[in-house]
Length: 74
Image (cartoon, rainbow, N blue to C red; front, side, top):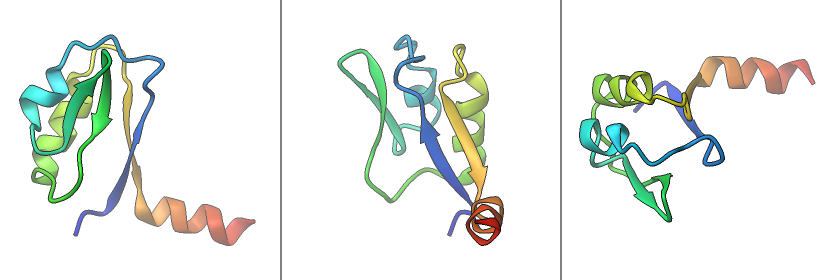
C-alpha cells in the first residue's frame, strides 16, 4: 500500500508523456493530458520518478499522513 495520494493538474500538462514512459501502469495521456489509470499501479519509486520527470510539474504526490493531519485540523 502506498503512503501517498497522487494529484494531477491536467491544466498544466503538455502531454510530454514522460510519466507514461516511466510509470506505464499508473499514468497515460488522454486528449493531450495526463490521466491516472486504475490500480494496480507501478512501484513507488517509478511513480516518484515519473512525477519528478514531468516538465510542467503536473503530478504531485501528497503524503497520506499529511492528508490525515489536514482533516484533523479542520
